[in-house]
Image (cartoon, rainbow, N blue to C red; front, side, top):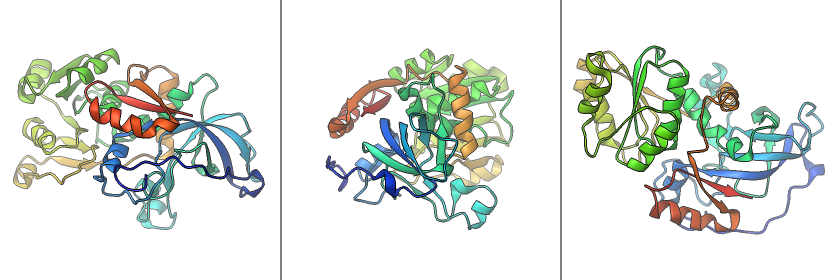
Length: 337
């Protein structure tokens, strides 16, 4: 992507196996998932995107060659990898919180991403996938890891009632993960009947379309007098945060996951008076990737209803245009290589 809205496909030299550093691994990329943050970058609305850039941060691949210092990963293995590049020396990194590294750089936004036939990664970020996992599902490990991390952010989730605002891919996966982690009841909201139908196909029982029914009405029907104690903001719009703050039980947790193209207005007096916890969630840790692989493999996270469209690499630009024209008729778009 040379500029917002402009995608070019270029011929470049394949990485040379003999030049791999000791901890590097050469991959043949098989699938790339198009993320909502990619679309923000495409429209020049992502706060971190640096142009020109090679996109792609959620993907699956096959190992082609390994550096001399890599022993447990072999050519032919099916893998994915975290796109984070961290400094390792700042205070967050020293505490193991490298997902919020002071010098964090992310492939596909600050550095070249995986939207290319061959890609080199370092061993420490690699995650080996089970032989039986499809490349489609392997490309979904990254967004599932986002959900794994986000649902670990509340002070206590098990046994609590949960509202997920936004039924896109991330909201859907967070709702599924909340169920897997033992939430009592999970309600998903959106303005798209299509996305809510996909949520139901993934086993999420309770949904409401907030263009026809308010969150207050929907939560009363689902939770009754119990109310809800955990809210996940995945829509990335101001009204979503405001609705959660207005309806959640006092003293409860709201986790902010959505990418906001415009900074929302938050009623700070309301936040303080109700003693709400507004909690950020940023990407994932390596263990979140491992948890994602485990949950997908166990069948507790359903992915097939979410993967709705495939495009070849040479039609990357067409894929973005399709997403723009069919936002209410597609979920996860996969690029095939």
